[in-house]
Amino acid sequence: MSIDAHLATLEKKHGELEAELRTVQSQPSVDDKMIVDIKRRKLRLKDEINRLRSDTRH
Image (tube, rainbow, N blue to C red; front, side):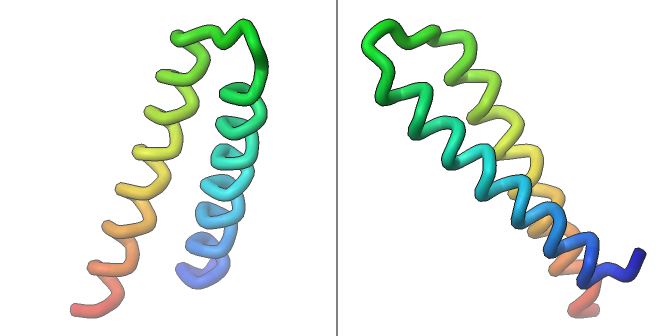
C-alpha cells in the first residue's frame, strides 16, 4: 500500500470515529468511558497521520 493510500485510509477511519463520537454524545445516557476510548483512538490516528505526513516531507 502506498503512503498516500495509507493516509487516505487513516483519514477515513478518523472521520468515521468523529461521526461515532457525535452519535454517542447525542445520546441521553452517555458512557464516559466510551467517549474517552473514541477520543483516544482518534488522537492515535491523528498522530499517525501527522507522523506519516512529516516523514514524507523530508
